[in-house]
Length: 387
Image (cartoon, rainbow, N blue to C red; front, side):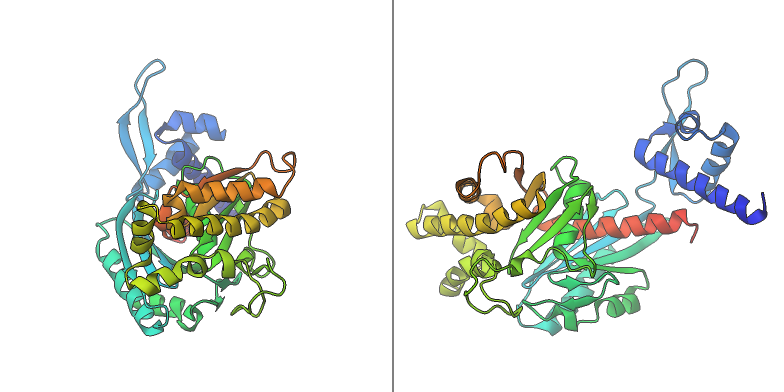
């Protein structure tokens, strides 16, 4: 075997051992040898290398199966940190996590839907606040991930954000210049799907659709546990499918788009406009006192969400649909209206096995999804020995 082949084998062995420590830790060297099929000398050598880089650590003795108690190994989740950012039309959320997704700090700000300059400034400022909270660690800030509500291509360029021109902000360039780390860009709903898969309570998500309902509507689609992005990266723009062929003109150029009927903005914005208060506070006040108009609005909201979800169920046939919207998460009657709409428009046999769930991560789903994607990229670079 030549030198290049030997180096490749060593790299592959290290990656294999590292993956098993992440998945099975705390785990002993002997168990790693058993799991991987590698001899004990190879395991010991590669473990020593990983220990030197502080990416794993020894936790102390484990249970003995006869003889001396083994020293256990565990992934060092505090070896580095990731920042995930969700830039919405009227908000920004920044999450700082360790390498296992534990939330260390979170920063939020309400944004003006028209003020792009303020959005750019908030992105830099709040990301900086998160970075300043990173504890001392071997690798420090491993990267920053930013998601936006719009088209992001497979080269991770923001192509178009229909409800606010976030695509005019040079996000990658600004953050690279300011923080000097790898920057990852993704669609907001895709990031939410990753967040729920990695950190949510939705179970093992293999065939699932994450539905983000805010100013617009977007889908994050999981097929065989992997994000489905489409040829250009534009999959999941279901908010712009027509549910009324001769409906009103949408900013995207289509007519009768789903999000013109079922988005939070389409259904509830007039309440905030009339009261001058924050939208959710106004909705909560009316709903909590049983206002008939709000109850009727909830029913209409659920109906139009259900119409779109029915199309998605019949097209993609997912096992699970996860809904992400603060108002839906707060009022079960909306979910009841959604289920009623779906059931009334389909044969029971055709849609008997799907699960409709509410996001367990709530507002942080997409920001946490971005931190997960950043961590994944960091670990790939680590296993390819780029450190």
